[in-house]
Figure 1 (cartoon, helix red, strand yellow):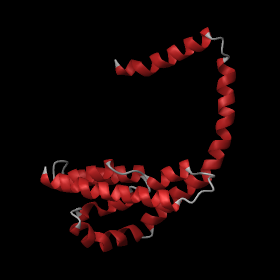
Figure 2: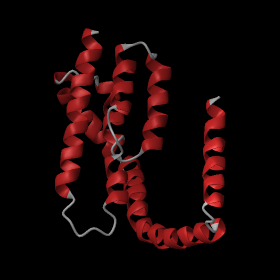
Figure 3: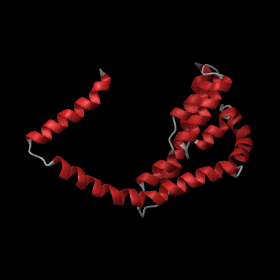
Figure 4: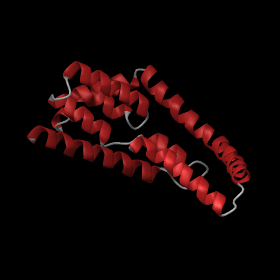
Length: 167
């Protein structure tokens, strides 16, 4: 039933536009013309985030920070095994998905580490990618929203791991 929802919605929209005598193709091409400059303005920001996230991993900085922050994570109740996921998630959604898959295969979905990995993945966002999209071309200072987002992600992770431990 839900598989038919989207086609039904498009059909209803199409019929509504026909009833209102809207020139659908002209509206569609006008929208596409407006999208091209947007994509071109976003491209440098997205490319920078993708390049920096790959550089973060390939340079060894990710492994170094994971090792260095391991005692802090342990103290806060975050399993050190998910440290790499915690550091990667703000940069890359697909990379963190792959890392989550590896963690679940190694430790199991019902283990404490597996549950905390799922919490880390589900309770956080790709902050830098989203910031690149939302603030592309903005002249505003991005430091405050990014710091607030990262802090919220981290505190939700601490609370989530705590709840995983007691539940």
